[in-house]
Amino acid sequence: MVVEARHEMDEVGDEVLELSGSLDARSTPEMRTALQRLLDVPGRVVVLDLGAVTSADVVALRVIAAASRLSALRGGRVVLRGVPDAVRRLLTVSRLARLVEIERIPGSFAVPEQRGSADVISATRPAGDQRHS
Image 1 (cartoon, helix red, strand yellow):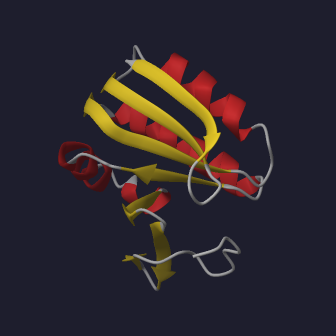
Image 2 (tube, helix red, strand yellow; image 1 turned 120 degrees about the vertical axis):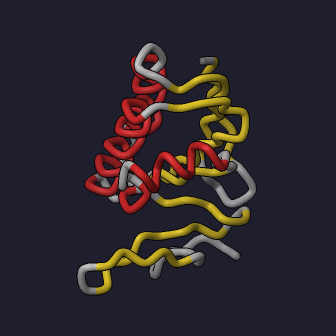
């Protein structure tokens, strides 16, 4: 896996971490380190661009889900962008999809919402998001 951290803000002011190659147990330490650096700032929105990811395993996706939870506890968010179909299916099968935000189109996030015992995905920005449209 090659991790490229782009330290500029994207068009809506978010930090972007581009991941490429295979996300697996061997690459998770490198990915975890890059994520921890970006999540050190409370309230930060980090976009993980998975557009160049060729494969992933559940170990790597659990690291992403844990980073998402840590970010939420610090008032921020981790958003997945450009999720390949195979990775999306693995997120669904592993039930990790309900723990992460997935960007459907740039600037629009799929946010897990709880409705009773079922998880529902919304394709809009979360309520209270103060960034410009």
